[in-house]
Length: 525
Image 1 (tube, rainbow, N blue to C red):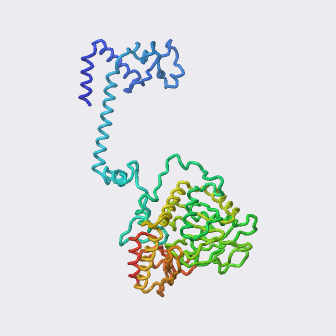
Image 2 (cartoon, rainbow, N blue to C red):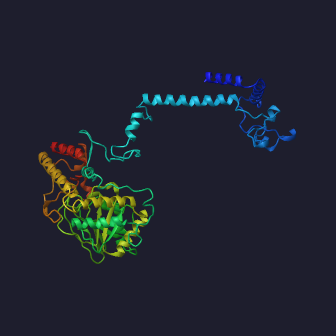
Image 3 (cartoon, rainbow, N blue to C red):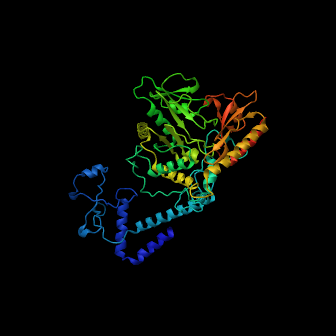
């Protein structure tokens, strides 16, 4: 910096007449000494009030020093007056030498700091809060086959596991299906331009006015392909998962003017979220009333899950519909990978979800098939009041996924057939689980059942998404606690209205976690 400054001074002296240099020195000295400080005045230079009288209002506001204001020189030039300090007008000319030096010094210092920081980051890749260049490349570089504009990869769910990890089988996180969808190429891929899906509205002529028409069409097409539910004459409603639609059904079926909340029941063991969801908002319209086997009354809503979560049993309504009693059929698991499709379900309200049909739990899309228009309208109103509508981006992705599933079975042989993949995978996992339970000698499972599957056109076994596992060891009364002690997380039977010696085990996770679970279970005696 000093060498540059000296060179600039030498150049200035060599190119400027002596008179100009002397004037420059006098002006610089006056500017630095004008108010007794070392800070030069602003570019809006100091100007004295005419007449030299009492301080102006601006001077009072400036602590008694001359007010700072811009001058308007003749001819519109950029020269400012400084008569208070120097008694003469500053001549027009080049930028003062000291300013050139200051600017050069600042620029060089900034460059030096940037260079030092670069070297520090490269040499301290693990310093807290600092990301090395190699780490930045690893985090931000696009994956092969993706656009270079991608800043980072999306989440992949639960972290990987090792032989010493805690294995979480409490939730039905359907990551088992990742292997299938990796092999389908662009069949389920979707690009949404930035200007699309911006409106709240999708089809104002539909009862469910925020549902994308393509999603409606693909839902109907898939049910006709599989043969698991009747869609003709039904309204299709979309929700943020089937849980939102379950709450919408409870709202729609509960009489608004009832003196007491409508009782909500289900046959034990029932899905653990039924009581939690029913009573979460402490609604005055409905309340959880427990096991349908022990219910006494006329006004009720019966929740029928078939195949049942947690034990996989095929169920019909125990109390039935009629009079003041209504039934909602939760058919989340009525798909060929879990159970034989023995008939086309045809109920007043049927609920389905992407998470268990295709494995896309993160898309958060469910749908309902509803016969009665007024019930469909009230369910739509609940979703409207709850979340205004349902993500159109998610609906479009779900429609694309459902289309890919149907395409796998329409128009000839295809190597990308979701239900065939799922059936093979579930059959293999159930075989492994039964062998592990037998090797241990302290666990038992429900008996194997099977039936004629109209979809596969063959006899198929029930291979449910969850295992209803019982610990038979006499000194174990809490099976979930016992397994937790061996780093296996399951859901206790008491959350399903059943004996705590039972647990629900998810069969839908990734292979590595499931394999570790099988080895640990077989080793317990």
